[in-house]
Image (cartoon, rainbow, N blue to C red):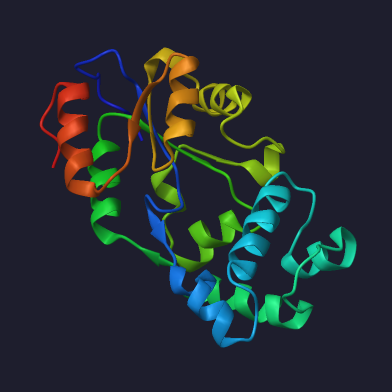
Length: 210
């Protein structure tokens, strides 16, 4: 799509994926869920965090691969972990109002996605939610083997969009990622909800964002 001339210095908006556009049922990794399965508190959460951190840089290709090659120290049995991970993936839901917002922004700006994500982000975007067309660039930590808040991840995303970091607005729910983005020259916004984001973007971009 041809992007209209922006009224500001910004040419691209880069979004995080998890807990900004897509949301999962967090009760699956809760202490209560662990205890109901006869597991120690935080055991499921700690396992998933470990997998996302290492799988998110391409070291492992699935939760089963993580068990088979990574040999994690955990009280969660392999088959149970695989079942819980499938349940977590099945619980994923896209916020339709965020999709509307991104579609609106796409009239004026390039849209990027920069996510710390293990293998499978493209399947979410293309096959499951059919929103891949909204993004001019999709950068997954699994593919580039670099996780936020590494500054290299933000430089990679901007380069893939064909813009300077100073021309990007970056949106993430994790403050340390936003602060890192700002170190590269991006304008960073901490996501706390769609309505607040619209207000912030209206100020930063100098146009009314609906």
